[in-house]
Length: 127
Image (cartoon, rainbow, N blue to C red):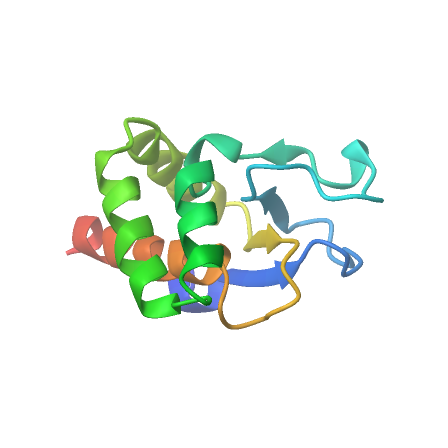
């Protein structure tokens, strides 16, 4: 298996899926408009940022550093996170994972924070 950094990517949900070996996972709490359910077989809404955090982000002028810190705390406290990490570890043996999001900003989004978090957790268990 190649390094997880290469195997876990983020991508807007609206980008077409070209590689059938990729596991596309929607990591938003709400289903995006115009996306067919069959185009993304896995929806991990249980590890998406809470509604409260989403509202906080909007109210604080898109303070990404604050959002990042708060979302990481939510991930640590979330009982579903460990299950998601185990799932991702298994999927990486089959091929790349694409964390999909709807936000138009390719850098400042929850999938980017989740990717960073996953890479840290996967490297901890690999050591």
